[in-house]
Image (tube, rainbow, N blue to C red; front, top):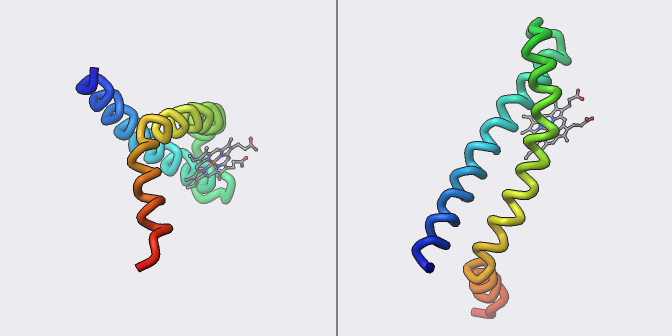
Length: 84
Ligand code: HEM
């Protein structure tokens, strides 16, 4: 059981990295098209459709990530609150 949770935690963390990379790439892509620096209507349509939807998936994955790591997060926050 514990092994499974650790595996899921790892998969979720990797998903966050992949999704963040996609959001950055598609965000830059849309910005370049908006600015007229790049003229690629097909790519623009694809990014305009996928960026907000993947952004929503990101929100779900981020909430899952925080839930799975809440114990670690809480202990880190405790250390921050401790006076030297
Ligand atoms: C997890 C991170 C992100 C989320 C959840 C997210 C979400 C969104 C959403 C929902 C929109 C649509 C807004 C609309 O329909 O008017 C949007 C637009 C946009 N995003 Fe992101 N975004 C993220 C990261 C980024 C990054 C890193 C960049 C730049 C490198 C970026 C650049 C843009 C641009 C330029 C637009 C405007 C497109 C336009 O309407 O002209 N985004 N984003």
